[in-house]
Length: 134
Image (tube, rainbow, N blue to C red; front, side, top):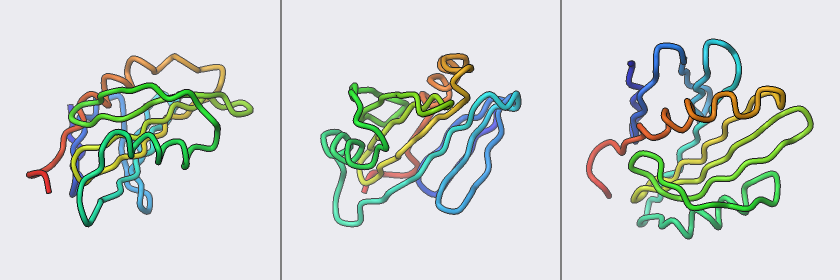
């Protein structure tokens, strides 16, 4: 298991997955090319986020009106939902820990929907905050 470490958080990456930085986002995908995770980080300069703020941001930023459910992934908590868009299945998370907010999107072909769900959930459960809370 490899560990992906950013300035703000870490994530354990199984050998059958890859990770790379693309602009302001981190991409994580499976080597079978079933799907891809995109993680964007927002840092609150003047305080901390709470999970209710995560829900408001998720509702505002999502491409679809969704039914959000409360979740915990690793050391982060917030909301998650999913939808189908044309030929794509999408799952979205907006989770927080202190001054960090992560907007996470997993997408795959609609035909592969659900195939990687347990692997994606297990991968996201390894999310840890780097350093002390600000």
